[in-house]
Length: 307
Ligand code: CP
Image 1 (cartoon, rainbow, N blue to C red):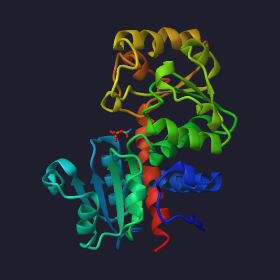
Image 2 (cartoon, rainbow, N blue to C red):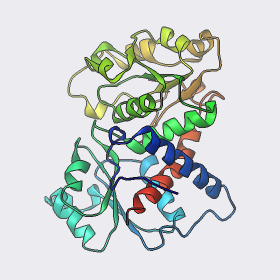
Image 3 (cartoon, rainbow, N blue to C red):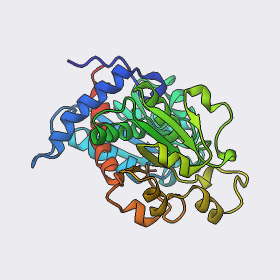
């Protein structure tokens, strides 16, 4: 029996631990479905979903589209680069025009933090945030925590390190909310210039030494440097960044344990993580991507329940 009392998924901040566990239990069932020879269920047969992407994406866009198709929804895809946005049309006008074609749910990625909240106040469809600037990326955090649960049995009490450009990362913020709500211990690591002041108020610890953090952690989630969101130089060079904060096989081996390595993608090989580590047996990067489809099916199914 589902009881997910949300119309939209804007951020993990709005969810309770019970909501997150309900998404996981629902995703368990959908993961079983998508591993069957016939991967499709008729659940959203009468639902039309628009995927509206104002920013580039590979994993999230493809994963949502697959999730929607596995649930038998009708799907329309919109990307700003090939649309009338380039002729000056506003966000509200763009979305209202799409909705007038009887769309029930909108999955949106946008470079501006708060774009999904803004939209939810102006239209009647369910809104799912597929990443809004530096604000939140809720389905990424759900699939990350789901992947940790799958690998370690539970998230509660586990030591999770998030390493890299925390300041510009919606993945980091959504992960912090999600992991803390599920009872994990979270440590952040990166250059002092890329870790927000007072971030400890979210219940996390900060350590600027990657070797210490790797020794402490059960799981290390490596983040990309978000060059596209950086207005000034936050560190001297990529080479120096890589020496201080890049995850190498030597660092993993020095930890002396079976560390689990995650990355939300896209990877900058040789910067935050070496190819040797990214492609190693300890890395669950492609499991994260696989789990993204089941998690997004669960989110779509639970939100559609309000209709
Ligand atoms: N993890 C993630 O959001 O990847 P994309 O930008 O390719 O969607």
